[in-house]
Amino acid sequence: MKFKLNHILIFKLIAILFLTVSCGSDDESLQRIDQILNIYVKNSAGQDLLNAKKNGSYSSYAVNDAFGVADVAPVSVPLKMTTDSIYYFEYLRGAKRRTMDSLSPDNRTYHSKLAFALSRTVNNVVVTTVDSMEIKYRWTPSVFQVSEVRYNNQIVFTKAADAPDAINTVTIIK
Image (tube, rainbow, N blue to C red; front, side):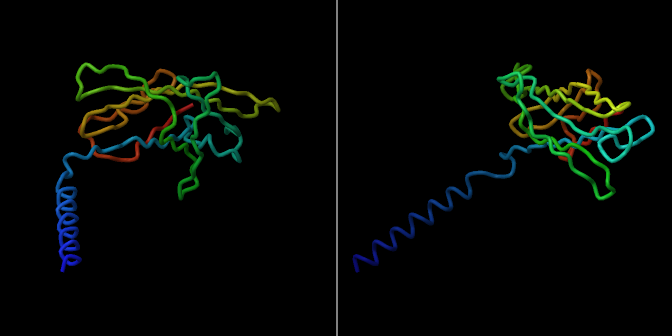
């Protein structure tokens, strides 16, 4: 009898704990995270400059965190391809974010800075161009999202605060 009573008490405690945890939050308390960037690089004629097999395209690249703790702070930005065989960089995370402003505890702006070293062969000589990308993020209790992207100080992407989650597409014209 004592054994059954203990099991019933334990079962009731577990049931109460389960109900407390499962009812403790709702969808409104979850923060939406929207930070994926797909970065396409094309020339003015629309040629994919990330397809190393095409003449005039970049054959190698490296990405560094400008806010990194060392001079060389690599960031993983894999090269991917669409079903239409168009190449793009996919940036998810990896660079340090610094606070730009935090006037309100419920609305902050962060930013990251990346240095892209893009190399291609011109007249049998490897030429490397170093470009900069600044990514600004909007943070509120309900959302963390990319709000603006600048490439070489030119705005190439913006997103309104109430815009839906999406993979953010950035096209760089070089």
